[in-house]
Length: 211
Image (cartoon, rainbow, N blue to C red):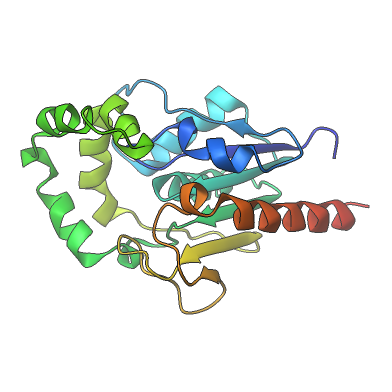
């Protein structure tokens, strides 16, 4: 496992800082990916291909993605078969995303993202600071595309899901998911310690299976 990498993909409107608390709990090196400057990508697949090229994703990697980052990880998994994909409050298909969010996404072109970012700048919370620093063009385009995402269509892929019961943006799956009863959408930020324990357990399982 010497060449195994763990790549952590942030959610939309966030960046690598959302994983600071989680990384502090891990005892092996991981790579927290920041979104590159938007260069015209219109679909999740296009973003996934760019991440693959920039990060040199291979079959030895483990992909961990929050929200949109998880969807991008799934698209990567359909191009390059990684060792595993870990979804933190993410979706396998578009209809798992909140109906309210999907409806709002249709009107994303009318949202004054510049004003929203300026308002966010006045907040002290890390989430607000990340949103202020995010590229509004990327948020607008991805929001508009989200209802049209075809979802994950791969097979025989190790996918591990963690979800908060109180997640209001992406519905908590009814099966095949590790559920945190008191958690919302931002699992990596709100529950870094138990997520770290779960990731360590997965790493041990992957290590044992490769022997």
